[in-house]
Image 1 (cartoon, rainbow, N blue to C red):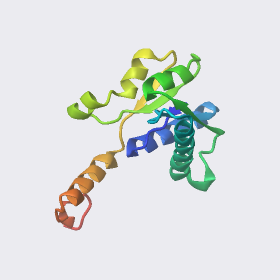
Image 2 (image 1 turned 120 degrees about the horizontal axis):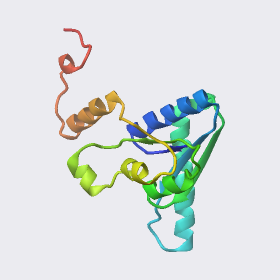
Image 3 (image 1 turned 180 degrees about the vertical axis):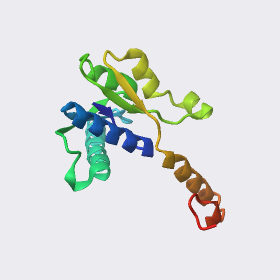
Length: 161
């Protein structure tokens, strides 16, 4: 079972969960937690459909048309990610795979970590996957673009020196 996040770290966790499922001969359950914004019944249904579409988009982006190589099931659930994942992964034989998320102090203070919640409350083993090494490079490029800073190719790893 994997908690699906929307960032680069989420894709890393999904790939690791697929590898674990292949090694164990198991199924991959991809779970996306969501919280509705509106109170109207129509708004809630629209949010549910948007969450399901987002999950399909994330899994298609992660695996492409070939799929993960193991049976795959997707699930969306209403609630905060940590409690939803702990509730879904109740069996002791489950393996819950989550991304480590951001490690910055400000982000941790503003957005509680689902990984920390799962480690503290899950009834099954939890595998916390660190972000891809490319995530920091991608964030640096986004910052440069936001501030319209020029990129010097000599600063890139593996660039011609």
